[in-house]
Image 1: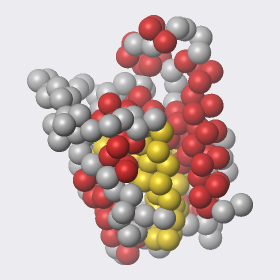
Image 2: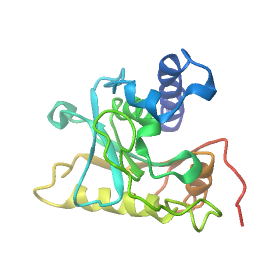
Image 3: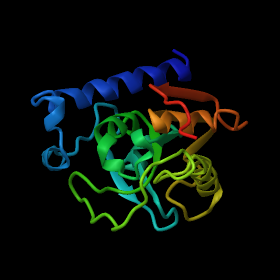
Length: 203
């Protein structure tokens, strides 16, 4: 199976994994309070995953295999993801992204964890989404995530040193985040683009 087809399969599997926990209540009841009660999952792949932030990459969240030594000769693909509504809450899609990471991907998402286990307090007075240019996250953050990961792959002392495949880079996103991914689709480093229900620009 090609890397593109495999990644597409993982995206669908990740979405399916997230559904059972949310299907117990009508969509109108899926509030942040409900999301906070859903535990993290390690994913179903060979490499149980975790979520974290890294001080070297401020303003972004990471999902990755928990034990990088277990990768052996497997090198991580990069999966830069744009959140629905261009939100900065990476906790909304954590089950999906933990699933993808568990199959050997370094997943990077703009924002931090404002819902779910380990959540932090969201800063007050955040701007309201009125256009793609005034969203809580920027499409440039996906490009920055890729650049950071590739530099870490070459930096001695990095936990990712030599563990990333520079030829396995994908951008993806849902709704407004899908538009952010599309805005990075021509990056020559990107080999795969996975778009889910993209919106048109709010200009």
